[in-house]
Every structure is written in structure tokens, then in C-alpha cells.
Image 1 (cartoon, rainbow, N blue to C red):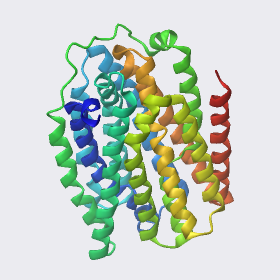
Image 2 (cartoon, rainbow, N blue to C red):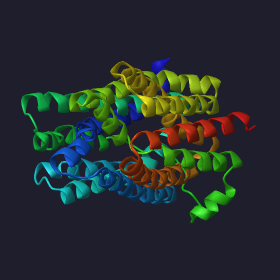
Image 3 (cartoon, rainbow, N blue to C red):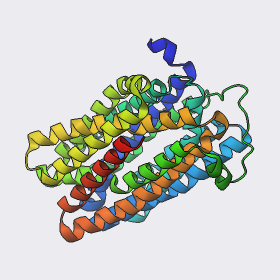
Image 4 (cartoon, helix red, strand yellow):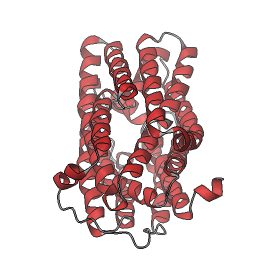
Length: 382
């Protein structure tokens, strides 16, 4: 069953994502700690950096998704996007200052903006009727990189205490491996170019199901702020950088392990049902983080968070690939991810401000309530 559902090109894209996330996730969990503990940044600044990085990626996801539809090519954007990210993300290893960290983070997100929608549209073109399995497999490969990356960072920090600059520089190794694999990724033969010139043209003709999903997922993204706040909340509870990072690693391990099986379940039982399930799990997790006072509960919450992630991100894109024709999928996925990134930007800034002014529990309670509301809307909507 596995070999029938997963093509060579999907496996290649999985390897690209694995090595990219290996590099990115060496840096992602240590960057907020590096910013706050070493460089003296505030929580509000962390939220602003994450938010601005997301809106940069969001704008470009929409543009390059549409552009890939128009020219009928996906792989060129895969090469360009992964190459840019792989090169700039390690710059703080050369010069460790807040402006360089900001430049590196935004440059990395520019690369993500260039590649994301074309890559997901390319995955969908190789999916056929197995979109849940294909996107689940890709999320699994991507997220296993997010398991080994932080572990590599922890090992380095063990042998080189406070060796943040070394981590940034060593992240170049998996980055270059990822870039190498992009050059053997190929476009689907014989795909059509899009005749739509504007996003407004696409949106007018898009099915109602897509429009409802766009609105609800954007609202959810606002309360689903950057995961750096989960890491920082974990550090607040445990008073340990290592435990906070290990919790994040454990979440990614669960995410990677269950993504493919959940993709298969989504193909069998429906993407909408799995998305509802994921939203409910998210609500439970964020309520738990708001009231957390136990290290044991922390591990349970991170495991549930992995199940939530596997039930939403890949499943949502698989759902879109089912309802949108191939020649418009770059625009459809790009528009959704763009709106989501804009919402995450404002949500991250909002979360940082709430945390600084009212404490960490308040933004977690709000996120829990809103995600539960969205799940109920999906349940009762025919």
C-alpha cells in the first residue's frame, strides 16, 4: 500500500523537506532563547519578529503560488526558495546581533514564501485520489527533520555550552543537502497553465467550500501564534532550556509518526472530520498550557499537540487539492497560506503583547476558546 501511494517525486520532495527542517529546527527552538537570554530581546520583540517574518512569507506564498499557475512550472520555485533559505538562515553564526537575526529570519521566510505554494501544488499533482496519504507522508518527512534538528542542537549545546553561533554554522550542512535534492525534482508532465490573471478572478470562481475553509482557517491562524511561545511557556514552567527544547522535539516526533496514518484516515473518513478532530485537540492543548503546573502534564500536552498538527496542516492542503483543479492549486494553496501567515503575524504580536501585560495564561485561554468555536462551526455546517 505504501509504495502504491507514494511516487518517486513525492519521496524526493520529502527528502528536501527533511533536510531543510533538520537545519531550520536546529535553529528554531534555540532562536527565541538566544534572543531573550543572550541578546536581551523582550517577548514583544520576539512576537514582532515572528509576526513580520510570517507576513513576509505570507505575501510571497500568494504571489508565487499564482505565478506558478500562470507559467505552468513548479520546480523552479522549489529550487529558488529552498536555496535562499538554506543560505541565509545561518548568518547569525557569523555576526550574532539582533538585526542579523531579524534579517536571517526574514530571509528564511522569503525563501519559504517562494517555494511553499508551488511545492504543495506539485505534491497535489502527484497525489491522484490519495491526497491525504501524500500530504501526510510529506508532513511526516518534514517533521522528522524537526525531530533530529533540535536533538542535534541539544547535543552541540551539551559539548559547547552557549554555543549558539556553532549551531547556526553547522546548520549549513543539512541545508546544502536539501538544496542538492531540489535539482532532481521534476514537474508533472503535461500540466496546464492557468488562464486566470488575478486572484480576484480565481476567488470569484472558487467553490463555496473553499471560501468557507479560507475564512475559518484564517481565523484559526490568528489564535495559532508562533510555536516559540509554547517553547517559552515550557521554559517558564520547567526553568530549563533543555526540557523546553526536548518537549518541542517530542511534539515533532509524535507529529512525524502519526502524519502518514492520519493522512490515510483522512482519505477514508473525510478531511473535514479529521480537521474538526484536530481543532478540538488544539483547544484542549492550549487550555492545558494555560493551566499547566506539572512537568508530567507538559509531555502529555506536547504529544496531543503533535496529533493536532498531523490532523490539520497536511489535511487542509489535501482537502484543497480535492476541490480545486490542478491549474489553480498554486493560487488556492497560496491564497490560503498567505491569509494564514498574515493572521499568524498579527496573532504573534497580539500574543506577545498579552503575555507581557497580562501574563502567559491569557493568550492560551483565548486560543483554546476560539479553536473550539471553529470546530463547532465545522460540525454544524453541512
